[in-house]
Amino acid sequence: MTAQRNLAMLADAIRHHQAGRLNEAERLYRQILQVDFQYTAEVHNNLGNLHKAQGRLGEAVESYERALADKPDYADAHNNLGIAFKAQGRLDEAVESYRQALVHRPDHATAHSNLGNALQAQGRLDEAVESYRQALSHRPDYAEAHSYLGIALQAQDKPEEAVESYRRALAHKPDDADTHSNLGIALHTQGRLDEAVASFRRALAHKPDFADAHQNLAIALLLTGRFEEGWKAHEWRWKAKQLAFTRRDFSQQQWQGEAGANRVLLIHAEQGFGDSLQFCRYAPLAAARGFRVILEVPPALARLMTSLPGVESIVPQGEPLPDFDLHCPMLSLPLAFNTHLDNIPAAIPYLFAGKQAVEDWRQRLGDSKSSLRVGLVWAGSSRAYSADLVLIDRRRSISPALLSPLFDIPNVKFYSLQKIGAKAPEAFGLLDYMDECHDFADTAALVANLDLIISVDTAVAHLAAALGKPVWLLNRFDTCWRWLQHREDSPWYPSLRLFRQSAPGDWGGVIREVAEALRSEAK
Image 1 (cartoon, one colour):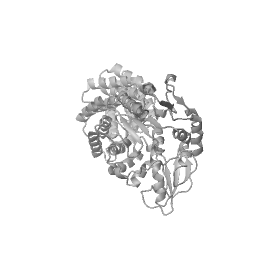
Image 2 (cartoon, rainbow, N blue to C red):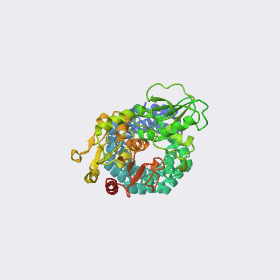
Image 3 (cartoon, rainbow, N blue to C red):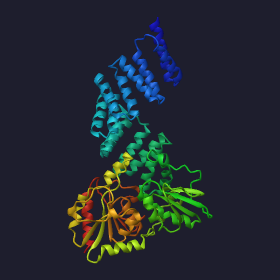
Image 4 (cartoon, rainbow, N blue to C red):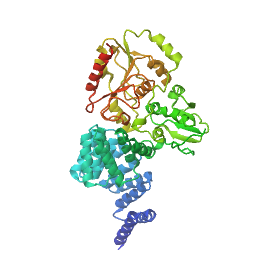
């Protein structure tokens, strides 16, 4: 009778647990553990699940370990312990726990998939892919494993295979908003923009407040020139996982484009240097609407931004802000100004190098009549704080060795404008003064003395174009939204020319085209 009573109590505890009455469930689990009961391991495991659901991860680990002390071959408890370890960031221990689950139950599809997630978090993508495939060999209809496999394949720069995995996931779970959004990202990477937009819209149909899907949709719309909807959707970026932690919670309202009436408007930088260099162009337009404009930017941009017309004061990020009435993030300015393709403010130059610094470099570099002075940039920042941005940088940056066909062209003198990353081989003979450029004002003065800038998609390209210098941009296949589709020019920068990859990874074709154009330019 005692055993039957304990089983009934356990069943009652499980009903409370499943109904979300966690306090009552915990009381019953602990009461059961006070008596001699053959299913003690199962009770500890359930208690661990309860603690995990409450975020009490240390207690969850303790409960799972007690379950395994009673029943060392308990595969589910090993798997659950792995989940708790992963939530604590203890990835090595998570991997070992999942492997122990599979020792005792090799066909445990969930443990295979969870092992894949832990391996992927460690950057061990090949092993993660194999784990997901193992999960699917035991359970072909496992939608989550198909989806996780897609994410790993996307991280391996295999978007076509990722698309297939996402489609298989959706065949088994068609209402999964995350998978629809991830499918859209993979399609976007392949340049299949209409399909990508449709996938993002399907994600939002299932989950209307899905900020990441709104942000992904915004980028696709902007890339295709649909600015009106794109800028509005882009405001969701502050709730998306990549930027939510950077949101500025000012008590003042965000500016929406109304007239200034001598009020003070704080325009503050966000995201990268390139974005600040591109969108600071709106500050003089805000001043023209009657605002006293304060511009907050990264310290490396502060001196350069003093050349921007119409700005009352520049505040380096990290320093105290003066009083202001309204604020606006830089990438919200196009929305405030109702920007369309036909009204982009593109009068260049709108930034200026210091006259004395330009003259100092002119004298130092000497006569340039006999050769074309060309600045080169081959790599951007890896932005290691975001896995997605690391992948983008992997596709936008190149090895300096790929530029070697340029160095045989006569009548050209090359200057490195590469501040970070790999140095060019000494045999290339690049002149490199970047150790003397301590901020963008210094770099601007050097760039002002060059004839042409050839750069991958990074901040120096924006700097040179904002200064009105000719820029040839080496552009990856899955281009940034700002460069639009199927264009060799840019409505943002009249002096910029785009050299696009015809296929993912085809830098050789881009460099050959640039070499031909440079040969003509240098005659």
